[in-house]
Image (cartoon, rainbow, N blue to C red; front, side, top):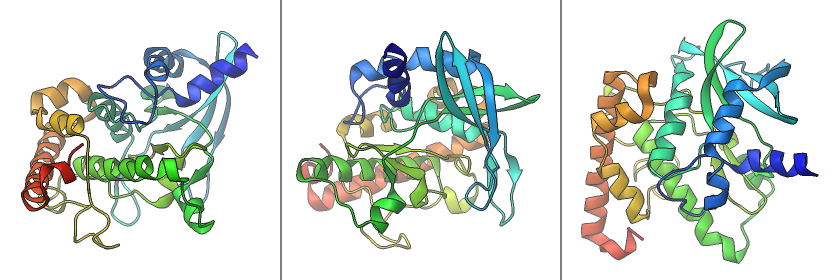
Length: 276
């Protein structure tokens, strides 16, 4: 029974950021250090590589064990250009987790660097969700009344975060939906782009290909203030070696675009309809 409880906590403990924003409780977030250490030091007792069209980076599912606790993790070491011209980097996985935690977003699972088979790579806690966004839509499921507002606010946070990190790969299988409708974000190896396309315009604004509803309609004031407080030095301190100076500068450029977009929206609608 104790082992079951511990493993359940491993599933939901994703970091200890500034604020929770409705995704995890303070008690759950308090396990952050414990599970980072688990991912780094637990013994590998099983391994299986994911193949096929749904796993283009061909990551590994590692089964880890330490002190009687066993849990799975996702390990990837992809680095460089891929078919289709996409730039992939496992370092983006670690940087996205660390930045999510720093901003108080706490929607990205615990992710650390770990060596496997002689290679450096990202190692992220694995858990099984109730659904993905893909299955939610295919089954035509909707959150129950009390969960509707929180669910859509989580979507708005996702769009703000992906705008900041220039994540161009937020397909519907990269949203994990828990049975209580909490939202977890995975797969950030195509993030932190530096080209003009990703430093002069936002991914999620009124011009997004799927329509003008895919915007950062409303955001927590604390999250926006945390973004405003970012500097190149702060980002460097948060992410360490996992972003280059060029990637940090591009992140700051997108931060400025987000703040300008929000200022314009506030001027049009009033702050009370944009920030909470």
